[in-house]
Image (cartoon, rainbow, N blue to C red):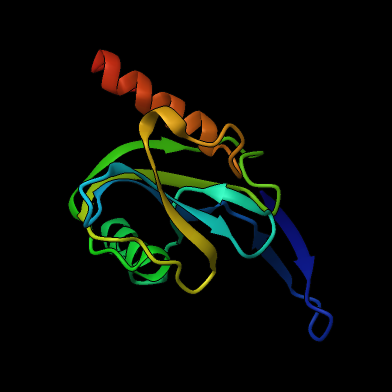
Length: 155
């Protein structure tokens, strides 16, 4: 979205752009130290509250992949491996705070997830016991992922 603004000091016309924010989310398949397997979800400490996929904003100068690795470590304490892009989600209403475009990554990890900086909790959920309501559009993302596992076709 583009708007024209006028500088209050000199009267010059300025263009102001409001663009979507780039974000990453991760579907982390994890095996903990007891051999339990599942998807790692974080319980958000800040609004909008609820269980969510680990993820966050891409920092300036950072690649999407670097952001995904950093966010996984910050929010879950896990070092992810086998990182690969799954799909991009761009619905302007996917985040109630602002328009975000998220690139979702698939990743693998070993260990026990631990809540990080902005997570109240972090837990491993078996694929057949995922919470019904997730923050943002993460329920849709996981439904797409489960469909992909069953059919091999991407969203």
